Image 1 (cartoon, rainbow over the protein chains, first blue to last red):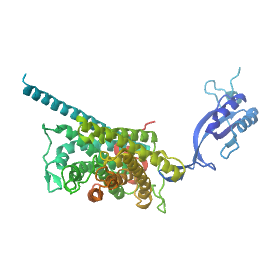
Image 2 (cartoon, rainbow over the protein chains, first blue to last red; image 1 turned 30 degrees about the vertical axis):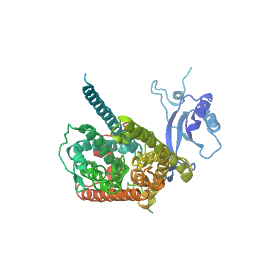
Image 3 (cartoon, chains in turn purple, green; image 1 turned 90 degrees about the vertical axis):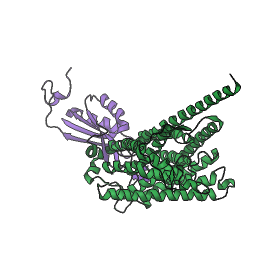
Length: 115
Length: 421
């Protein structure tokens, strides 16, 4: 099991969500986050220029079985890209344990619904 | 019925109707001016941060409540009582008057009360986000009981500015109302010091964006609307052809100047700062309104546009001047809008008055009087403001502690926050 975290543009969220669904990923969590980075939003308030420095992005957190890791990453890289600075990043890390609260299933079985 | 009796009966009915029409107009205008209070409240709340919203709303509420009572007890007759030496009116406490002088005395009291409250409420914006609430309550009481009525007496109550050979002309209060509030706000904002984080290590000003420009824009629209009571209402009568023409003329000059001020700021920010900026455009409309208030009755529609444009330009220059040169932190631009644009509008009456203005061949007498009036009232408000806020500073204190300012005045000063999400 892996945890895939992706920081993406807010404007690409719908595309990424659809691409993940096509890749068979039906469950994930996301947050609206703020960060600092290379992208800049210069503004002027009452004649004083300032740089917000903070940029708004969406952070997705997806726990997937090992067999799904490659295509999940692939679908995010394709759907979240605009080619401009600020497209975001994808991080992959190991997950040690996982449980489904309703049934007590653990490991890979807790990550998908058996037909 | 004899012709003579019929004539007297008709004359009585007409004069009764005249009083009714004028009273309805004055009261309606007073209600509109009262509605400028929420206008100010929304502008000040929108242009400041969410953590101080309950505090700024409380200040706007309480200055109106305090002002309404103390102006009735003392301020009104200090301003409009029989003249004593050109300086103050003869006080009679707890004003009560059933006599009709154009309109009933109580209608005049209400109309003047909402004007007094307008002067007071300007100050809360200039001193927003760091001023101690108790000190603000005390200030509200003093300005509506003494400071505003005394300079108001000079202009409107029969005092020395109205006794000059060429009387000072401030029809609805660019100087009498707006500048008094602004110059006191300047003193208060200077003595209370800038908000934490307003100036960097080298003294360079930082932007502290307001939390809700939607409320700010609503507030400015409300003020613009209320101004149709402020200026046309100051005619204090509507009956008869002369009054009807006057209030219609004033409504037009008022509206044109506001529009010209807004457009000046819109294109001014576009040129100066590359993009048309909302918050300064809102201030531009207000600058046009404040500017036209002094001469709205005696300038032409074209003159009103010129005053609006100049008031907008003065405001655009004054905001960075106050921010960078004076280094006085005025979160909402009250000093620039009500002080500098108000002074410019008042002085320009001396140029653009169709009867007596320099540009209309009336010579420089009115211009000279206008400058004297602006300077005298500025000196009065700055001086009394300095004394009042200095006394408050070294007694009960005018500034909240660092921790209260950092975490928000709402929580510590009131125990209540505006936004609970």
